[in-house]
Image (spheres, rainbow, N blue to C red):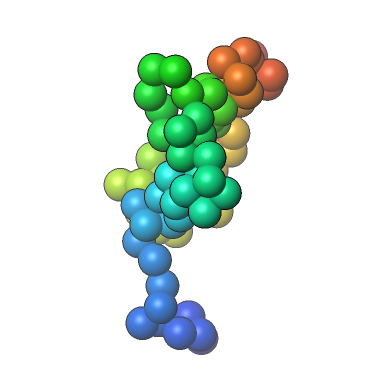
Length: 79
């Protein structure tokens, strides 16, 4: 349906990001070293080619990864 199956249960982009990062680390008892970008934590993150947090929601599925960092080292980069 146009408004989704359960529109009252949908997440904002910020809530979705937090659920996959900080909340996921907390649920795995790994919040001391994962989940947020802070000094002393593992640097695992991606960069996408558009604003998936503040941009139009219909653009989110079109986002493409342009850079991936795991453990502080680049493992993928679009050149």
